[in-house]
Image (cartoon, rainbow, N blue to C red; front, top):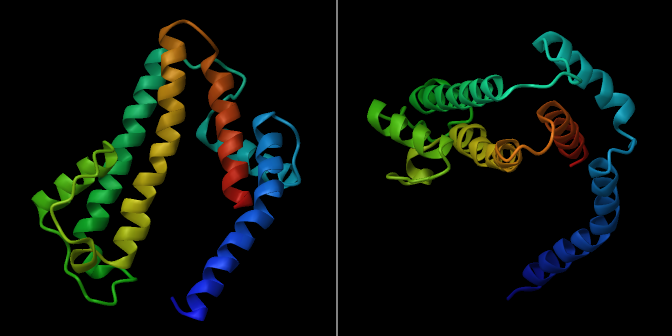
Length: 182
């Protein structure tokens, strides 16, 4: 291994050690529902989104509304990913000039990533633009984290524990603050 390789390893380890304690403390405050240094900035933004979306964070969301919202969210994710894969030839961040995926392959890929099976029948680096990989596939993989929150709470609702509105409001605040702090 070269000196540069060793320096890169040392730099990454130093960064992990340097950020572990402050980030852990920040995450602890977020998950405990405490005010953080980002609360004055993110609080008004979050309340604005709630207002525009017609969401009352203090109101309970029933199982039917919850299910429909989940299905609508996944359908929108599918449609956006499908369009991104089909239209990548006309979108930015395509230095190799890749054409759009065929309809059946774009459909298969979008369904696969939205359902978290991540099955691929193509070579990502020889088929997909940077934008398709970054804003399409990577976003869908990140959404899996949010879906884990959803699935975990769904079990609690099915077994009669908890309050949907409180859980979703708290998770939204935590995700917003963690995303902004990273």
